[in-house]
Length: 167
Image 1 (cartoon, rainbow, N blue to C red):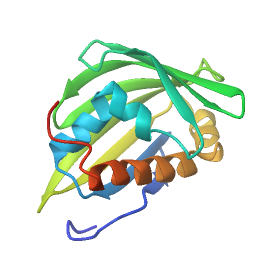
Image 2 (tube, rainbow, N blue to C red; image 1 turned 120 degrees about the horizontal axis):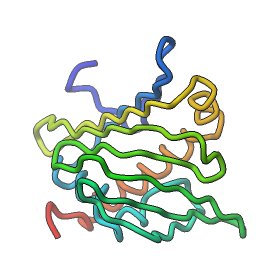
Image 3 (cartoon, helix red, strand yellow; image 1 turned 60 degrees about the vertical axis):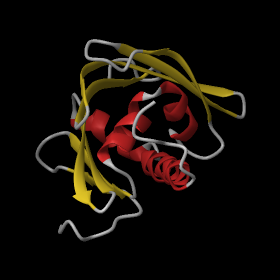
Image 4 (cartoon, helix red, strand yellow; image 1 turned 180 degrees about the vertical axis):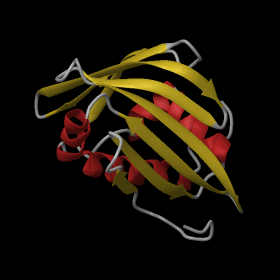
């Protein structure tokens, strides 16, 4: 894919030989803005997940070695998620991700922010699951709806100027 391609919906691919999900999406934002959107707790809670969900962060330490937990709620149903930040730097975030409804399934996620120039950034996300079954369960969960709707909310925050490059 060339760097001039604009993706306004995420491309989600499952690797046939390794239990990995790869997600790619372009944003009208700088790498610093995307980094802030993924590490600032107030901003993250505003855009993550599908429409109609309310996200409350219980714990959020977006630093190398930090931990996180949030609960997403809709129609009286809560969905808890937690993990640890293994590496947090301006161009890359490495973290674990666990849905508490399936506590034995832990994914190792790596996000990178690639500067495309002209105020555009490509987000690459990779989730390495502990089994093909866990990966396929994530894919069947409707994750693409949450990803596309969440990123659309993030687009809105960026377009409204609500995400600067620093706090």
